[in-house]
Length: 425
Figure 1: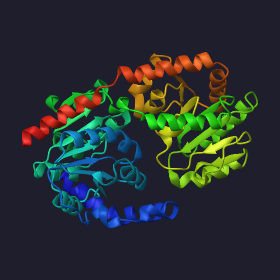
Figure 2 (figure 1 turned 90 degrees about the horizontal axis):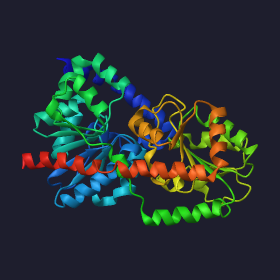
Figure 3 (figure 1 turned 90 degrees about the vertical axis):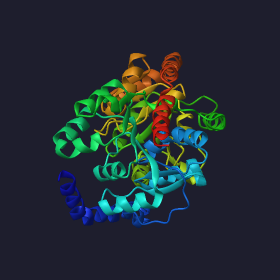
Figure 4 (figure 1 turned 135 degrees about the vertical axis):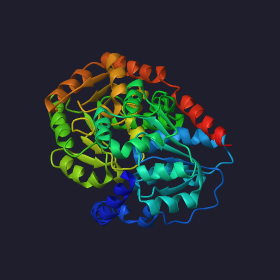
């Protein structure tokens, strides 16, 4: 009964969802395209032994990339379908995998849309990245004997409380999961507290620790850093994946930094592409600003480089001396701090980092991560690091050590997935 009520409400609010799509399309036109796919209407190629991997947006897609590539190696005859919910996620799938996977938007969690989608791709297994749980999707997979794995699973205290309040709906959904492969024991315990059976939970660690940086990317980053830093004469700061409300704080801090380190360069990369123009205006109002998308030269007069291209975040991290991880000075839970850690860089984050709580704890434990709460503190930490190369090197070495010491989650996740695939033949 609970799921039927949920479905009825979903159908009733569908016009509002479409209205929101239209509004988002006014800022990012891609949201207005391929809407039929969201209702399960699309033409699929011929697929065999399909493994469906669902990643919501950019972060989850990047995290899923090593998993998808390993699945392709281990199951060469299987078709891989990768779904996302956002256009930026869609762009990442195409950039990472090209035509080696079939990409389509995931269906809205409406009974008809989900059933049409399953009929078209006929998956043997569904792998959901991190926390994207939908009652109808999981119900109809279970009804069709399609195992569902929640991979690299995390569950914050806030999200767990929300699931608990909706236990009348989420209880059955969680019990329909075949396996939850959690990032750490705290996440696993929260799933167990919600009623998930003990034998449905495993702890693998986070597959984001398994980040690998390609040698070609390392070489490209080194070349750019040499140019932009004037052969190492300028300190390069990076603010990665910033959110609305953070940019002003970061730019205020940078203004304070320039009072001491007058030739410093700031690379700022907004999380959402629809905000590129807005952030460009903020930067240009106070600083000599260059946009990465316009291919203008970063010279000695450039104070801010706006990273307004897609798919270059990892590259731009490699050009920095210090990285601030965005989504953490506002209540968004922070973003992936392990990519800059893999570059052996010192890290700074705000107080909101619940999306990466375990990684944050490990990095702080090894003195690789500093926390700040406002522009003054951010400026102080940047200056402290900027004026001490040995401190930057020490923190960066410790950050890389945390990444290296926690690798292996991907192998453990694949063992769980392959066991399920073997069980269904």
